Image (tube, rainbow, N blue to C red; front, side, top):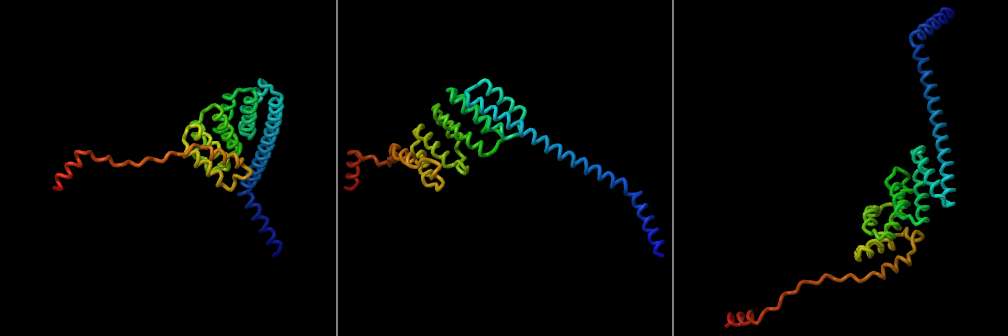
Length: 234
C-alpha cells in the first residue's frame, strides 16, 4: 500500500512537472536575468560616479591653479558625460568661483544661474542662489535680487536670503520693506551664527526714517463763505 502511495506521488509529480515545469524554468531564467541586470546597473552607476568624481577633482585642480581654459573643458566633460550626477552642480559652483577670481562676474552669474535652474541637490541650489544674489548686488541689479529671493522665505537659507533681500530693498529706496526684511532676520532664532547680527542691526538703524503719510486737512473757508453763513444766521 505504501509502495503504491509512493508510485502515485511520483506519477503526480511527473504530471505536475510536465504541466508547469516550463513556467518554473522560465521564472528561474527571468529571475537570474533581473539579478544580472540589477548588478550590471549598479556596477555601471558606481563606475560612472567614480569617473565623475575623478573629473571633478581634476576640475578643482584647474580652478585652484587658475587654469580657466582647462577648467572650462573639464566642466563641459562633466556636464555631458555625467549629467545625472551631483558633480554637475558642484562644477558650476567651482566655475563661478574661478570666474569671479578673474573678474568675469557675468560669466560667474551665468554659471550660478545654471545651478539654480538645474535639477541638482536643493542645498547646492540654495548656495548658488545666495551667491548669484550677491553678484547681482555687486552689479547694481537690485531688482533681479528681489525677483530671485522673493518667495524663498521658507527655505533653509531664509536668514541669509533675508539680509541680502534687505540690502536690495535699501538699494532700491524701498525703506519700509528693507526694515521689515532686516527685522525678520534679527527675530529669526536661526540667525545666530548664520549672519552677523550686529551688522544687520547697523544696516537697519542706518535706514532713513520712513516719512509718515500726511493726512488730508479740510481747506479753510473763505471770507465770502463766512459772510454767507453770517447772513443766513441773521
